[in-house]
View 1 (cartoon, helix red, strand yellow):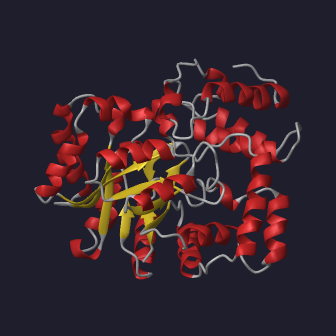
View 2: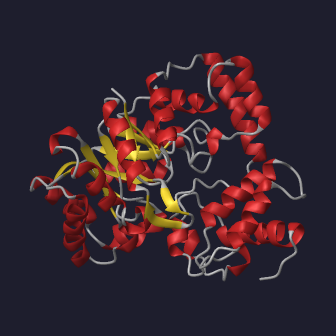
Amino acid sequence: MTTLGMGMMRLPILEENNFKSIDYNQVNKMVDAYIDAGFNYFDTAYVYHEGIAEDVFKKCVVERYPRESFKIATKLPLFVITEESQLEPLFEEQLKNCGVDYFDYYMLHNVSGFTETAWKNVDLYSFVQRKKEEGFIKHVGLSTHGDAEFLEEILMEHPELEFVLLQINYLDWEDENIESRKCYEVAQKYGKQVMIMEPYKGGFLADIPKEAETLLKDYHPDKSIVSWAMRFVANLDACVVLTGASSIEQLEDNIREFKNADPLNDEEHELLEEVSKIINSNITVDCTKCRYCVDSCAEEIDIAKIFDLYNKHKMLDTDLWTQFGNAYLNYSKLEGVGIASDCIECEMCIEECPQQINIPEVLKDVAETFETQIYGFEN
């Protein structure tokens, strides 16, 4: 039976652009609302919120609820691993960060071309399997943004893996780059449990083009736009659907939509295919705001934030001033942040991007749009 997981990747913060300024009071309320609704699966990672998300989980869940009342999933940070000697200290640090004696679910984080230095040169699989045998891990798996062929090779070579965490939503289902459906089918072929991330594509499916919104509202006037995205994933053969709410209101909406996620009929599936075509014709940057690129940026450019503003601006199909252009101007005045034109094209961000976006090239367009066309300011 599918459950709703509470992801700790996009938690509420108190200070704009400071992702360590966690609003602990609101997170506590979110945890309470989530558990009161009958759910208990939390997903975090070593790198989330600039390295403090595991500690947030400890403070807001472990220190407030008995261990048997929740399940915790976290991930081995392949991004930082270059040699085997790092594994044991990292794992012990994660146990301490989370405040637990064992992990219910532990996965290799983003096994793909972006992390091949780790999984090609270090025997990660033997390490996590040994930790499972020692009782520190209950279930071993991986998360990946790789394609279906890549995933099949891994599952063939490593039958000990029990589950996979995949990016699945109706927009990515037939996407030729992400291959959500094909990856889902590969996991089923090898009998692996499927966990779903990005059901709303980083919030993108909550704010779709007006033409697409009209199609959905004409068919179901009383259903919210996000309900369609939740209904799509909640009725797949998966054990967990993760949502990364950034406020108590978003979380409560997610809980309500999950509990009311009746199956889609054939006509509704066809309608979502039409909606996907409309979105794809309007979307400029396929960014899910995971923020991996931000952590690697030497110029401290909040790439995820300005790509979000850029996408929304472009959807309006105008070169004139917009609220998103104004938001970019406000962002540019913050202390300690880089703007699009600060990019030095080191390409470190490209290596970190699960969506395979050529970030430096897009940043040139962002700079041209917001910095030259609209405001004409020079860096």
